Each structure stands twice: as C-alpha cells, then as structure tokens.
Length: 76
Image 1: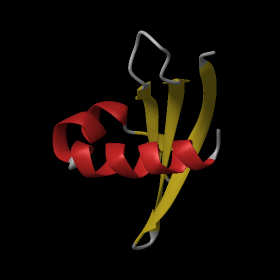
Image 2: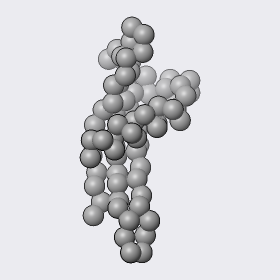
Image 3: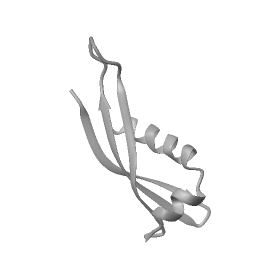
C-alpha cells in the first residue's frame, strides 16, 4: 500500500532559517515490483520569504534533497 505525506523540513544556516516544503511517497516492495520512494520539494522559504526559484538555481540541491528525504523517512 502506497503511503504519502506532506510536511516541511527546517534547517538553521547561520542566522537564517531554511524551510523546505515537500511531498513524500513510499511504495513497499511487492512480489512483482521493487520498493519505490520519492520526495518532491514544492516550496522553499528563507526567513519566511519564498525563494524556491533561487533554491533550484543556487543551492546544492542534491545535498538538501538527501537531507529532506532522510527527514521524510523518519516521519512516515
């Protein structure tokens, strides 16, 4: 059975707070299919200011994606 949830991940960076909103989907392995999981980052805020486009262009999104995925796994 597929599980889904939406939440937000926050991280303090210097004097700023980065808040990442995401959707997480997890489908366990079955007899026919492999396990699947996905995290989609939907919005990003820095100190309550929306910076989603800036995030995609200038952040190390692979690193942040991994942090959000680890957080999402713990909040299933």
